[in-house]
Length: 194
Image 1 (cartoon, rainbow, N blue to C red):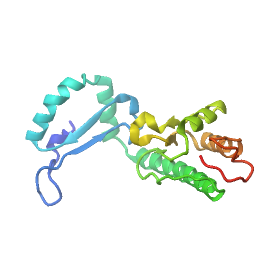
Image 2 (image 1 turned 90 degrees about the horizontal axis):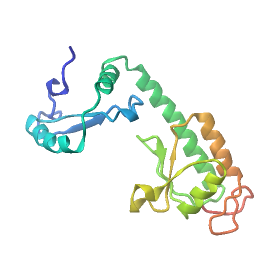
Image 3 (image 1 turned 90 degrees about the vertical axis):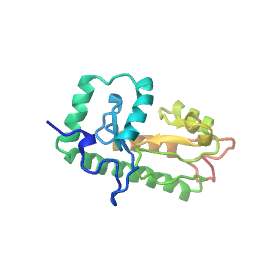
Image 4 (image 1 turned 60 degrees about the horizontal axis):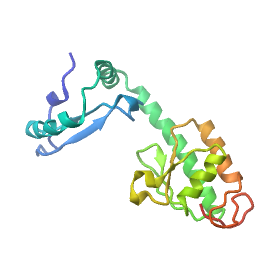
């Protein structure tokens, strides 16, 4: 039978053998199991005991089916992880290139290149107008304010969809007249701002 994470040599210790390290992870993104809601941690036993006091009040028991699926993912072949990582990098690179092309066209657009998530979070002039205009054209993005006050005037663009879907979405974003408090258009070479 597989060892538990608590039995992993050095669990809860850093590379120099110092205690106090807590490692938290989940199967959600690595194994495309977001709906399973399963995570795990490694830490010193006394830390885990304290965490369990909180955990038992905020989380119901995970189903045995989900637990077995996660175990299979964690202990099975891992080539799917590298393949998914490569595909998400390809999609991310496409989205970043499309946004940079929009910047070169004169749009005032700020963003950081994601290094771990499957979405990008660009700052836009008016998130409500941006989201509404895209929804009218069949492209859905999430308003940044849905993620708290610091997300105001940002949008979350997921690249979990296929590259083909992303290409169609960015055709809409780049080619349609999107107005955000001015007469600027994305498709006429005029200076505008997302």
